[in-house]
Image 1 (tube, rainbow, N blue to C red):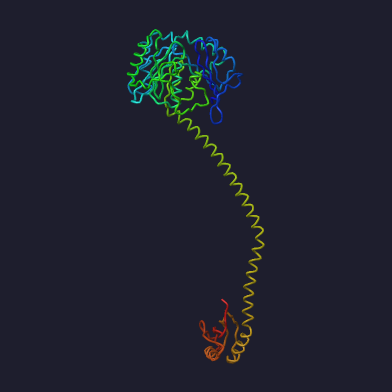
Image 2 (image 1 turned 90 degrees about the horizontal axis):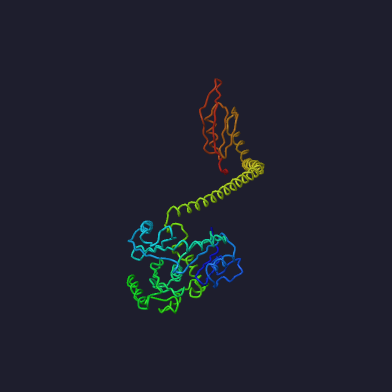
Length: 445
């Protein structure tokens, strides 16, 4: 589900702080859609009536998440340090220690565990628990107003402040004195990964006892006194400076509205704390959780690509079919033209032969007259064939050699010779074939 709306609520004894945010196309902006109320503000009055009044002002919505922060005095917090172990092992170890860590029976409390990885690899765990009778009335209000499914976090206000400090990129580690619900106050130690320690400063302590307790906590986490700040100027510490990079400039400051602190875990990567009776959960990177969505995306991409290729192939086949039809139609149109082209080639060849014949015709008449003049009487030619400048004669005579010698004396002929064998009949007539070449005749190739 896409989360489009966020609401942060800080519920103290005599006032309620709230702040709403709505996702736009490119960022978040402060708003509570559908409610005739300011997007942030403070509602005076006794709890939990103020909470019921606020939740009744806007209708339940699936795309909304509500984060509820309560004063530190409503919770008990114990810190446990573990060696560098995986978070799953750290969770199992802390759960096994719950009976001795919590001073109340487990059946009487709601609890959650906040894990932070320290810079040296060790794991810091905060066991956060509260009496069921203190939390159930709050959860009942969410159920009665229809917002039970929208509730995504229930935690001490100090955890929300830590998420705000981390998101605003304050220098870490840092110690902060928080006194949101007078006269009680709290000392919290923060690292970039979250809150690693929380101590309630007892009201019965003297100023010296409080200073001694704060000093021992700073020494435990190797923090100088200069790293101790106060959320408010009345805390007697260095006032918290302005954010180095105000990445939540569109929201009020947490000094003005603690609902911003309740809203901040939604914008940070810190572990979500929710005391509602469900078992503690930690974020664990599961490779299959990345692989399965990636595989689904890849499958959708391949399916879309396959459909696109099928459409492209279908269009290509249709185009090829249309081109084949056009080619066949063009071939049918070109066939008569091809016949005309072949006829023109034959005509050109015949025309060339006719031209050669016309060009050689006067010379041929002279040649045949010369041959008739030179050959002896009784000579007959039955066949004559002219190929270019070469003339082949077949005939009969009483002396074939004499015919060859006679034709060689003519200035019109050259290369006069018998071709093949000469046969003599019983009557004495010789059958022969001779070839001769016409002089000064140009032949087309």
